[in-house]
Amino acid sequence: MKATEIKMQIVKNIGNFQSVRLEATYSLDSTSPENIEDCFRKARYDLEKSFITIYSKNEIKEGVNDTQEIEEKSEPNKQQFQRLLKAYRAGHITIEEIESEFTLSDELKEQLIKQ
Image (cartoon, helix red, strand yellow):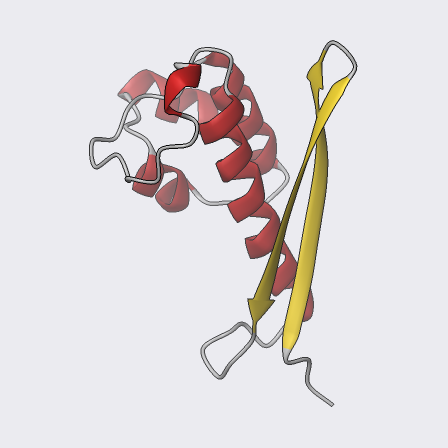
């Protein structure tokens, strides 16, 4: 029997005894990965990326509720880069996926590749 949907939820501490819960439900179809673990990895990546985008301490908080996508890619800040580095080294994301969301300098690419 093949799963038809998955639900992923993460809870993050945002400081001062506050936390945020992010949850998404994904419908699986013929274009979804066959391996259910890959589906959950992709869902986790999406939620982690959303958390970084919305709750990064270096972002302007006034734009949190804006729904417009920012077309311009920026270089990740230190906190974002550390999370991306950890996910990359654990095999959860690829450099191509990172580059689809962020601009990476040659120096940052080298740091990613170093093991």
